[in-house]
Length: 214
Image (cartoon, rainbow, N blue to C red; front, side, top):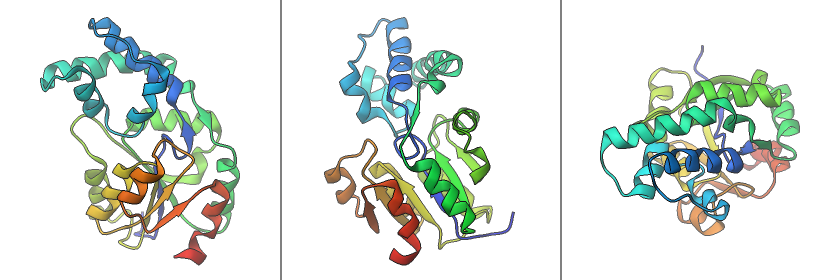
């Protein structure tokens, strides 16, 4: 793949809302190991960060083995049904189609494992719009993923990361990439502004104006 200026999208909270599947799968793992479940209203804060980080904060454990066991139990349910308990945001499909038709290459960089991300994009019928999927795993941070994409010459240094949480914006900054924060996901205005993105947008149709705003 030739090096190119990509729009690199986050998945959860940017392309689709996974809160139901993530919440139920978190509780599946927590309850299995005897921890109290979390309320649906609490799930939003855990959409975006890596799973090992999420479970570490939920159970107060720093044991790599225990965290790995929780992640594994989570993924049992997520692989079975959780990935499909997901809703694409209104306007996203149309925006992706328009960007692809305009010749802008699109990629995906998510903390979610790549095979799960692929299934979700297939579920929504939008897999064809993405040239690559960069997926995460235990111990891998989004900044590491972007660094690998740059190091492998998959994307250029003029590419833009698009996401709904501070972790997306900070990962872009760590790699000296431009960043766009979106307000229809799970990150608050305060969280996103504190990360200082290059641009903050409120609706998917604004994605089509990024070239003019750059």
